Length: 428
Image 1 (tube, one colour):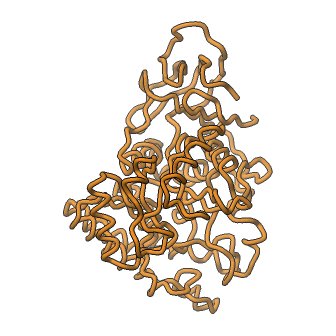
Image 2 (cartoon, one colour):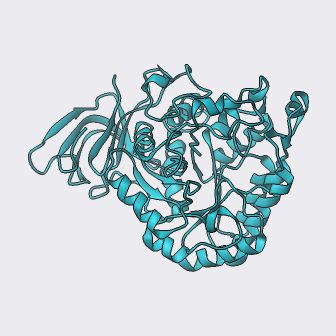
Image 3 (tube, one colour):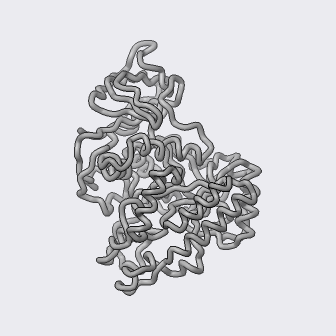
């Protein structure tokens, strides 16, 4: 790993973005910034990037790092290291920790602790309501002043529409986005998977697609009414995408994300009662998966958020009724998406980069990651050619297991730099 003040010459990569293929050239990182193609002074280190593809490091608007309170599942050190191994330069952590991130001092503490660790850069989200209870609004102004970049009760839908409306009014005044977990809690009830023929065959309680579509309509209408930027997290159904398209066409400030697991798995993955693929919202039908892919291809979907949700192995070995919801996927998401959609010819590489760079930046109101001179030196080098298996033994996350273990993929991040510091290097 390198220090933040080194001048590093990355030699011979092909540099690409969502907007251009710049071809093969060198790139110099110095003082935490991109210096250009040639060094303006002595070089401390050279990295041979021949045969690799370089691009701006990715942004993940939706990760669960479980810190504070659930460090057995993940902590800041392991989570940020996993993010760097996945090619991410910046991640937004969710607020459903213990204690809940509903106090400005907790936001400051997260930022300070993360800044002292190698790995991806942390930008915390904070709770929309106190204790995630959905009744009393949090101190949005204080949380934003302390460094919160997003307000969300993710994991728990805000059932009370009046509370959501008032929260949206505050968020609009502060120009901070709200992220929603848009599911009607009464409709989803105790469902542990998608309500459909698979749940009926297995005899398991189902979560209907209507639970998502109904709440997405409400949250999108609140966005239209208040002018608040409302980001619909982890969309899973064709019906919800149709609602989002309806409101976008009418100028509502609504954005949405999809996850790697909802793009690549459907509810038949639970046919053998495997809780490793139990997620919230649940894996849906093949038609819903097709709709998500169509939404990506058409530009309706704004970005990809991993919804990285680590748990201990013992928790995920419980039965399907009691095991927790969530998949840990930070380290495998980029190669998974590259192999399934770019290498297959379904998406151009530029579209995947758009979903991982410009899209999340727009959702958050940030400048998009760039490779321009003077831009932050957040860079990832990718190997798009060499097939490698998903190997839990090499992963940084504490939840080093998942549904893709053993699958052979291309598109692996080889080196990640954040503010000019190398925070990840993969063994060739």
